[in-house]
Length: 158
Image (spheres, rainbow, N blue to C red):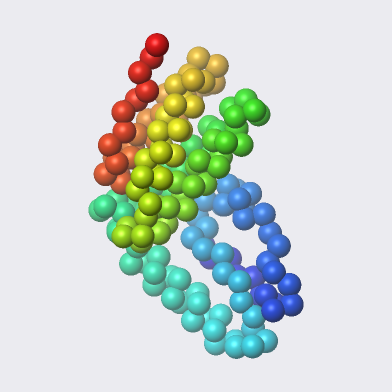
């Protein structure tokens, strides 16, 4: 799914991208354009984005990007159960992971990805007793790491 916002020359696209991506995890791109200046540009942007998404589809170390996005959607659902004082940080980490995996493989910041995935694992281990579904949350994080060929270790208990 691609969202196209028109009239960017008059006013920037003012939408809650984060909320839209949470509600509709199939969103692949949000494009801002202006039909007044070049109607053909809209079609080209959408076509180029679709072509890029198609070429990126299996670029994730052989992993299917839609499978990883589904795992991220699962993480978002479980993140809603976290206590408010840490929920926002967890959602930021999830957003950062999503942004990085949507980049072509050569442009990804792998250390950043690994750091965010470890932060999510740590949050899962801290909240394990208090929130239902933490095992699934941790398993989803581990699976994303596996699909991206990033070695993760579960935080050790004290």
